[in-house]
Length: 403
Image (cartoon, rainbow, N blue to C red; front, top):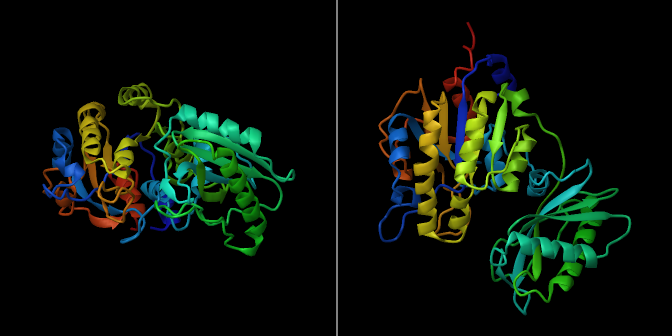
């Protein structure tokens, strides 16, 4: 829908909207049972919620397109991911509250493991600890020297993730990733996507070469993979776009970065589901829109750990869902940003199941929250970016169009 038309229809209201996002929620059937991770999980609260709601399947970008976390979350918030192409580096920098400046080029780093032939054997270096990450970043700061006309910064994000920022004149974020996204291949060169980016690509390749030399004696994290190059550009906030006062409660930095990008407040960082709920409860009366993010569903999907992903879903059902329902929100959405099937150990193109509960929704026949059931839901299959007007309508925040 045209955003200007939508803005002209918005009305003020005090209704509450809650988004509970289980990252990488969608899955694929287990070979033995024929059930996905979500369908396998014991989820009485989510099943009860689905029965009171209208359900469907969402394509984060477009049918058949595998989404990254950044564009998938922008779709969740109603921003066209093809229009707002925000690089992961910027999101990572915002997520750790790095003082990013106009013209800076930021990128996401994975510490990784390569073998003697230079081939990647682990893209996440065994998911090293955050403390090890901090040590490695300090090691690089002390030992990597670049062209003095360019300043560079490296900061820990969490586990194997870090953010790399270059600051100087005539820099460009139009650079190809060096992460091939698979094991068994060598890291790629940073290739410029336009002539103006050649200077920046040379600096990045110089940095990677020197970083490799510095890390060569490390047991696991002996290489870096760099992706999501981008320069910072401010975009319209959710307050400006929808009139919503928003709070994000997310543990992982990149998702806090996404939230900051669209103008959400971030008050505290939860270390557990209980802390997430405490923040939610303490500030429930202050905000219109709540973005609650659960990361481990995605992490275990990427690890190929079917059982652990099921257990996280079950814990969300047992611990988080009942407490949200006690608040009686006007709209409660439960979904994922994308699918991360354990069988693929990566993001995939499969649509994501979704529950939309509201006090005025038209319930469908879905009785259980799962991919097969949600395929039959009343929302059908739609693009995730088109879902926000449906949410706002169910929150009674859109008036009639036309006479």
